[in-house]
Length: 260
Image (cartoon, rainbow, N blue to C red; front, side, top):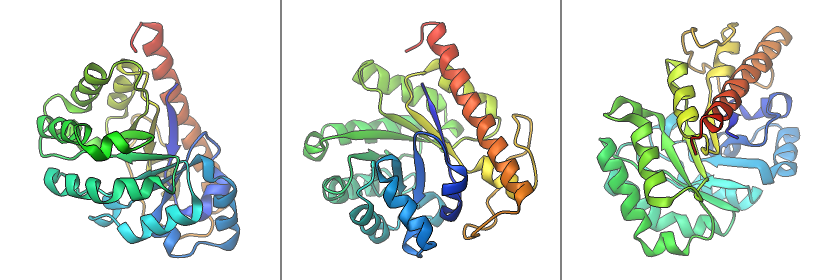
């Protein structure tokens, strides 16, 4: 079953994130959220995915990622990577993956490249490395920008399925984009995908909009609110429920048709 993981300001996680996994942007945690939020994150650490912030910041916040991993000892931490840069990503993987594994149950590795083929080559080189073999538990993160390339994320997932077999189920889709149906089709074709995240439900609620497959994707305006007005909190809950249902239905549909 594919789980949906909403991405939102940390101080709203206790109010809105009710799923299996909770997404924590390391640089926001390092900026000291409310004490009640820090306590909640510690309590739920075994369900926390700590992200390195490369998508939001343009480059990973390596120091914050390591610091948060040391403090929370989370379920999973995303290894630092360089957006679309294969060689720098391989260097970061070799440098940071094993140290991070000392503080988290799993390490998510995110290959990078300027084409789908280069992305797969990056993953192949990671898998051939001593670092990969020594990582006790790993997840593969598949970024949404691959959908801009020939074959898209489906080509990357097909590569993973072919080379790793059906036993390798720890794959996470990083982000959902327009049209929403395209992500649902990917999940239906690869229902063994573990989870998918998005800021979309929160960003739409922030703009007082209900997120639907036909709505225009919004961008998060403010990563640091301590609260949302009650009507927007209600919208955010509805939006998260919609996205969770889409992920679940797509996964179930795929399994019903014998995929994965």
